[in-house]
Amino acid sequence: MSETLAGLPSAQLFARVRELVQRGNAVEADLLAHLAEVDARRLYLEEGCSSMFAWCQRVLHFAEGVAYKRIQAARAVRRFPGLMEAVRGGELHLTAVSLLAPKLTQENCAELIQAARHRSADEIRQLLADREPRQVASYVRRVPEPAQQAQVFVPRQPALPPTPPGTHEPSAPLPAPRPIVPERGRTEPLGAERYRVQFMTNRETHAQLEELRALMRHQIPDGDVGKILSRAVAVLYAQVRKRKFAETSRPRSSHPPASPNSAPSRHIPAAIRRAVSQRDEGRCSYVSSSGRRCEAREFLEFDHVEAWAFTHAHSIQGITLRCRAHNQQRARSDFGDRHMARFQRRDLQSRLDSNPVA
Image (cartoon, rainbow, N blue to C red):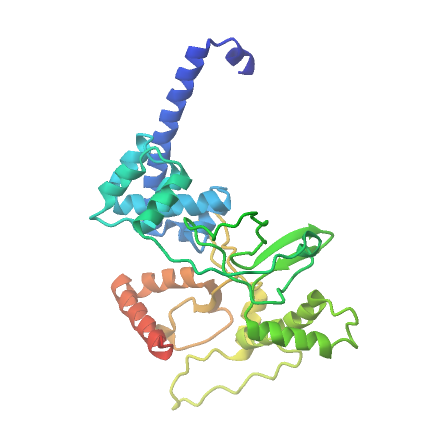
């Protein structure tokens, strides 16, 4: 192929590139439409994935950033079909659609698409910022020395949030290098079974950590924050698994069965929770028709194979671990979408009532 292209006249090469770009734009638009349909039907659940993002990563093998952009763009395309035609015609690229998506309404869709045509990502960010100007407070922050940056796990002063996209920090005669301030917690493998963990914390937690370093100097003379956090994480890990899966080094014998006259309880006995979590290896047990098992370890819930409302019984064989998405999928199958929609609205309202916003 490379030898063939090397002998191609320039005009013909340019023509082929333009043709390939046009075909690629058409394929991208069709892909977004298909992704939107998969998302709307929640078909990723049948493939053993707890979310659209997980399916795009593990089944389609998209990189994280590409998966995020395509999902956001697909959902926007479903709501605003004009976006798909703009992508098909090469007027908007994938990043442009993902940037416009949160700002689009039925009223401004055509206007924004027209304003963003053939613009770069930075130009679109500027366009959106000009439409909704934001005030940024002036501040001064300490810039760590380059040699210290790799060693700082918890900042000694409360870290300020990063500058929002589309805005600029106050200018200075000689701009200093910007410190590395992560937007969220980050874990980076370093090799040899070592990892760098970087996160932001508040003033109270930082003060507690500094006092903990002082109190533990006998056990950890160098005051290494990583060693302190390792111990703290081990303690919390054991507590959470005990509460979630009833794990303990001294399990009690099973409680005697309830009397026939007592009301059935939804509470799953600790012995059953321990056995189920060990059998399912602490992960979602859903397996797709193609044999793919869901890899989710987050938002795990104990799920009755036959709905508890029908059996009022708990057993090791009758309970599995499911992620919330696959648990709700089974509930929709048992009770229907309409019933689950009412249940989810009640659950959301109860959480809002228990955590009112001041």
